[in-house]
Amino acid sequence: MKLITNFTLFVVLIVLLFVSCNTDFIGSVQNFRFQIPFYFYVNYYDKSIPDTSRIFANLNEYEEFTKNKSRLEQAEIVQFNYWIDSLVFGNNQPFDPNKDTLIIENVKFLLVFAKPKANVVNPRDTNDFEPDTSLPTFLLGEFNQVDVSDFYRKPHHIYVISTEISQVLTEVVRNRPYFYLISEYGKVIGQTSPKKYFSLIFVRFDVVIRFTLSI
Amino acid sequence: MLIFNKYINLIFFVLFSFSLWSKDIVITRNFVLFTSKNLEGYLQPLFTTVNQSLNSSLFGLSNLDGKFRATINFSFSSLLIPDDHKWFDAEIPEGFYDTSVTLTAQIRDGKIQNGVFNPNKQPTIFGGSSTPIFAAPQNHFYPDSFYKTIAYPEGLHLDLMVGLPVLQLIVETPLKNEVRFRFLTIPVQEESFVFFTIGLNQRFDHWFDLFGFDRCKNLNLHFAFHRMYRGTSFDLTSFSLGLNTTNQFNNNILGYFGIQYEDLWGHFKAIKDTTGLNQDVVNNPFRELREARPVQISLKTFTKWQIRGGLTFIFSFGFINFDLSYATQPMISFGLGLFFEKKNDEINN
Image 1 (cartoon, chains in turn red, cyan):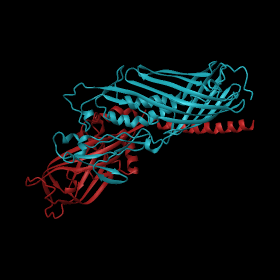
Image 2 (spheres, helix red, strand yellow):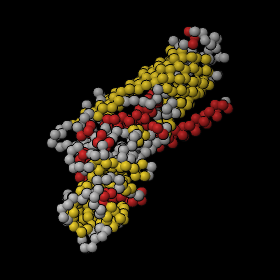
Image 3 (tube, chains in turn purple, red):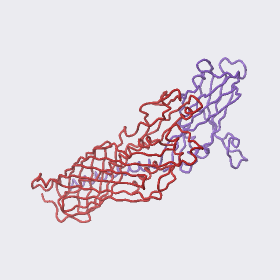
Image 4 (cartoon, helix red, strand yellow):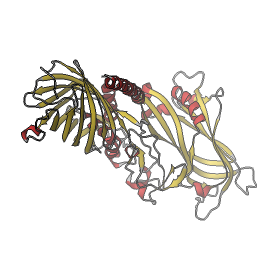
């Protein structure tokens, strides 16, 4: 009889273990997470630096986002990279990464949330939005002595978004999935004139966003 | 039932997400989360879990003495997910291997690394976070322009996974065997999902008089066959075949131990909606996704062998049992049984 009592107690413990496991399982299976890259291709013509460039991103233009919006629990920006695809000097000579040296004093990447302009009922494109000054600007990364050769069609400048920033972004992105990626370019090393002109600069941002959907 | 529903939801969400749901599964060609190979690798540990739990509770619940008895048995299990079931070698677009086409980089172990890795470790459904591979095409034209940054789905961050619960009818017959039946059908998005199991546990020691007059020891062969299907798109077959022995220590306690070979196979197939394919190319680094080829995966299990031992405590109304199982996903199981009819007399040692 004692053996049965002990065994029954043991079974109760096992049941409790199972209940806790099941709770974890059921909790885990509430959600499905995946990462998707978003590509932001920006082409500048007759660009001069120092300068600040702004890319508008509206996730509503992406099917992966809009289709799952109703089930969206979280949307976190986890990583992004930045690279220069093409560059042509002011004298129309293309930049050659093996020959030319071009070093920019510093480059800053910032994220600013956008909001529809007050008088726009159905915002569609970048002209219908403006920076939301009620929310903080997030510094994603700042780099000094940026050698353009090292960014020229090279994908290894990957920036990880910190958890603290990511959590703030989650709350905003879910409800207002539009933002600006801002890049601030300093002077070119050795630059004597106030502005240095380029005929063409094509830059690329690949932003990876983690979506959590409820099943 | 909640766990079973969660299971079905999970499997079908992953398999059929973004689908248009019809008798034949048709998926929008913008479904780019998985290639067939990656979906197969992502789900294989889950089907291992399914297979192991399907092939549980197949023996050890009774002393097969030839007396008729019918029992309803419910059991559930929990499986320990080993680390090597948390990742798989994910497919990489072919252009990523050619540095004249595209250059790639990714963060591994906290460091930025150039190029692709072999194996390209990405999480399975039980794993953690995935690793995106950033790519910079070296030219603006085809094929370079296709080979852009890719990312992968993530796992559920699970160390322990609940097995598929078992609800079965066990009928002991005068032939000193017991037959098991499991059956379930539920509607899943306009189509019936059907599951059934037929199992046989046959005592054979008495044919060779292995234990003499000892009626408490059994040596048995067990076999089970399982099928799950939904329309023509999802089909899973599993079986197990094994040898087990039981010893009834007294009227209340029965110990059991067994070894079994098991396997699982099946397929999932979904076709892509190719409307407008020629006008609007899906710009994706994976050729399969660009060309809107069907999603077609083979269902597989890591587990081929399972060794199981446990104890069954028998009461007047039924039994409870507990066992441990050694397999690629070590498992503990707990079961309850309710007798429809009690045997005429009990064992007298």
